[in-house]
Image (cartoon, rainbow, N blue to C red; front, side, top):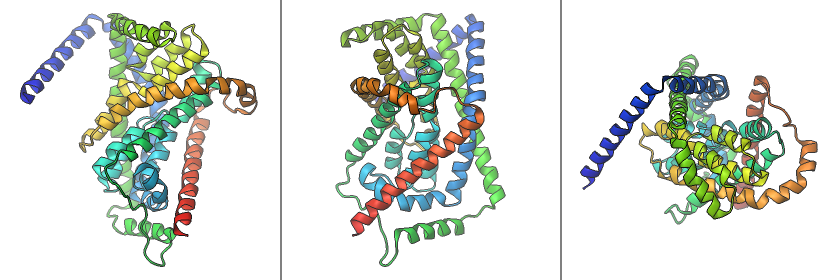
Amino acid sequence: MLAKEKNFFSLFLAFLAIILTIAMILHPEATFQGANYGLKTWATILVPSLLPFFIIADILVELGVVSLLGVLLEPLMRPVFKQPGAAGFVMAMGFTSGFPMGAVLTNTLYEKNLCTKEEASRLIAFTNNSSPLFLLVAVPVGMFQNPNLGILLAVSHYGANILLGIILGLLKSEKRVKYFQTETGKSILKKSIRELFVTNQNKTLSFGALMGKAVQKAIHNMLTIGGFVIFFAVLIEIFRITEILSLLAVIFTKLLSIIGLDPQLGEALSTGFFEMTLGTKKASEISAGLREQAIIVSVILGWSGLSIQAQVSSIVAKNYIPIYYFLLGRIFQGIMAGIITMILFVPFLNFMPVINMYSPFTSPLNGWNYFVFHVTSCGILISIMLILSLLKYKIIKN
């Protein structure tokens, strides 16, 4: 029975591929426009924002810095998320750098035996997020011309994802987890430094070779991401020309009518189903209430789009890391982020004048500021996690 189902699925995929090929031949202009848009997005946004962090993250892993952080973050990550301490680094980078940084670093952790396959499966579910700059600048400032909306979107997006990570930890079969180990007379700080030294002693590559390997790996990942971005940009353009998006929009329109939201936003959901950025932009262009727009945008950001889901799935596929937690997590995060936005919208609306007074995000950032914000936000988040972890360790030790 399973063999028949597999054969049927293979036949179905082949049929879809043939149909798509024919559609691309019949609509060469749409294919070119989609590919051109995808290439520009990849070259001007994704490469500058992700490539440097892919390189430096891999170097930090190889030099043992992540192992050091892993020991220090263990008292926080084990009891809260049922994850090894090194997962805290992935969480910080994933939250501050955006898709698909979490998947790339989870892959690296698994290859270095810093986490199990089961832990990696849960880790990718809640460490692949939109970046703070996308939530605080690109969407509210660039699309809605409302800087204050970004704080609400960030709270709902990251809040839903942290909740997802905690729930996945609670579902873990282990009844009791020993979340830190220290030898008698050894402080957690001494153990973390020793872990750094051990990692460096076991290192076989020179720093030059290590950097070259990190660059090659980063470029390979960026090319993979670029291929998916271009392909899905073409796919969406073909779907738009052939009215498939309109058909999907009808389904979402009826669904929104049932739950009491503006049915016009069904068009944004149909686009966001495939590509997150285009979906959020479409939501900002529809003449609906700001509250309903914010809810739909939160749902789209949580779902993240099939394009990003395909990127993450492709990145972890070589190590056969299961993706069912990740895929189910997209549904959970989309719904939960929408609910949080719906609940918090009115309180945030009341505080918007105050937020506007102190908000630095009133205009798009240039490339240098973008880079500085990435580094600063990641450093701040890791620092906060370290403080919480060390406080937790001290409380339990006493």
